[in-house]
Image (cartoon, rainbow, N blue to C red; front, side, top):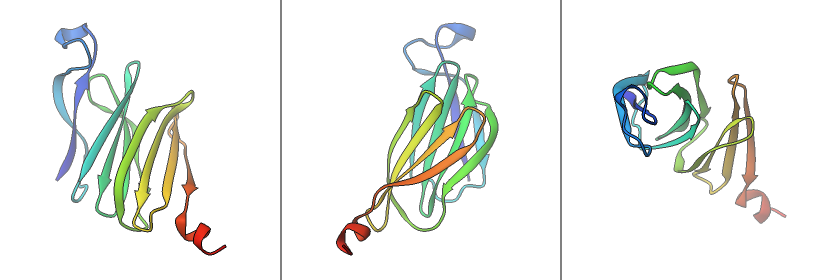
Amino acid sequence: GGVGSQGVGGDRGGRKSGGVPGGRASIVHDGLESPRTTRLASQGDEHGIAVQLDRGVYFARVNRDGARVGDGALLAEDGPVTSLDHVGVTATGFEVRWHDEGGAVRSATISRDGRVALRTVSDPARVASR
């Protein structure tokens, strides 16, 4: 199975305005198993798409036509993900947040050049052990 995207844009190239998907559908990454939830954030002509998998979170940047920009990244692959909570735009790129099976909130920032920084926002297991 693949994770798809459609171009999202303004009034250019026959696309609909107001953030309504338009353009051609395209495969962002072929081979992701069991996609559960997809979230999208827009930053000008570039968009960030995050996909919750049974065991992980995948992220890719796509252009206004839906074509992947650079390489995609598997942000979490160490265990089950219970929810994909947020994809947003930052001053330097995108941020993705999710909950893991233990209830910890994880975060990844992805810069415009594709660098990924992971961190734990909150971890109930650490709080309970104090």
